[in-house]
Image (tube, rainbow, N blue to C red; front, side):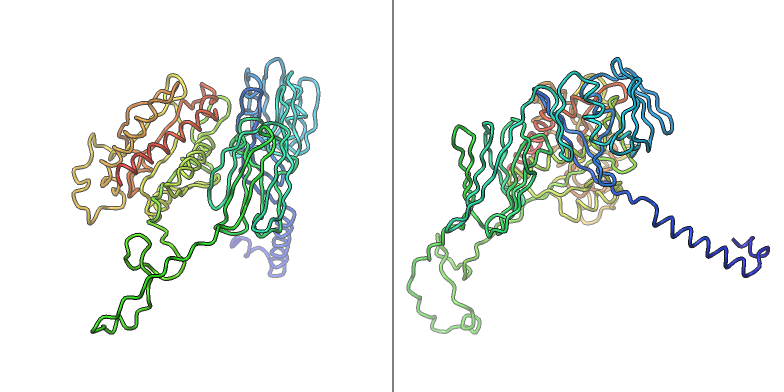
Length: 514
C-alpha cells in the first residue's frame, strides 16, 4: 500500500480505499455461515449396531462416506484428487465432487439434498445419502427417517412407545406404553434419571417431551451410544423416583414424588447451665444432640454431604486439525478415542464414586499444557489419556504406558526427592510409583477380557503425562492403521467392556487406597 501512494493522487487513493471496504463488507455479508457440531449416528443391523460420528454443517446432517460404505460392503479401491473422489465398491463405482450435490453411481447421476463436503480431510455426505445412494448399493432394506440420528439396515422392525403424564396429589406419574417388550435398568446421573431399555432397537415417535409440571420438566429418548434409553429431568431436586414394569414388559410406570417428611427428633431435657459460663457459651445458639452418639449436631434440617468425590481426569488424544492415526476404512484416532472416553465417563459416573472432568470436549485442538492444567486445577486423583495406533498383530489390543523422562531408562533419581518444589515439566516424576500401580491394576483387570491382547505396562516418554500432578497412565488401543479396518475397535461391546473394566479397576484402587 505504501508503494501505491506515490503514484496515486489523494482522491484516487480515497476512492480505492472505499471500494476495498465495500467489497470486504459485501464478502462478509454474502459468505455462507458454516456451523459445525459433532454428534453420533447409530446404524442398527439385525444382530449388531455401530456408532459413527455425525457432523452438523449449515444445519444439515453429514456422515463420513468411507466408514458408512464399510458397514455394508467392501471397498475395492479409491482414487482421491483435490476436489474429486472415485470409489470402487463391490461391483459399483461411485464418483463425488466437493461442493457438488450430484453423485455418479455407475451410469446414473443421483442428486443429494445438500452438496458433498470435505471436512478435516474426510469426505462427508448428507444423511439422505442413506436412502438415495446406499439403498442402491445393498440388497438389504434401508429404513431411515430424515432428521433422526439412526438408520435400520436389514430385516429390523424397531419398536416405539407413547407417553402420558398424570398429576397426582404428591407427585406425578409417567406411563410409557411400548410396542415391544423392554427390560429396564435405572441409574441416576447428573441430577437426572436414566432408564436403559434393553437391546431391542427403538424408533420413537417423538425424540423429546417437555412439560410444565412441578415434578417432571423433560423426557428425552437417547441412543447415541447404541443403547436405547430414556432420560428424565426432574423439575426440582430431592424428588423420589419409582419405576415399575408390567404387562409382560410392554408398560412402564414411573412415580415421581416428594420425599416423606422427616420425623422430628425425640425431645431431650435441657441440661442445666454450667456454674460459670464463658462468654462464648452464653452467646452460642442451642444445638440438638446427634442422633446416634449424643454429641452436638448443627441445628436445622441440613445433613452433612460427606467428603467430596475424587476426581478422574479423562483425556481424549488429538483433536481439531490433529487427526492422529487413520484406519483403512476411514476411522480417525481423534474420533475413536473421543467415543471411548465418553463411554469411560459414563461407566465411572455409574459407580457413584467419582467426579469426572474431560480435558477435551468436541473436536478441539488442546495443547499438552492445557490438558495438564485442566487436570491439576481440578485436583485430579487419577489421569487417563486415551490413544489408538498401530500396535501390530491382531486387533483389538490394549497397551498401557506410564511416564518416563526422555533419554532415561529408569525414573529420574530426583523424582520424589524434593516434595516441596518440582519443576512444572517434571511434576509427574513425583507420582511414578502410584502411576505404576495404576497401570498394573488396569492391566490385571483387562487381562480377563476375552479376545483382547493386553501388553504389560511400559514406561515411555508420553508427553501428555509429563506435567500431570497425579497418578497418570496412557491407554492405547489398536491396531489402528491404514492397512486394517477399525471394526474391532469401534465395536460397541468391546468399548463397553473396556470402559466398565477401567471403572472397576479405579474403584478397587480407590477403595484400597482409602
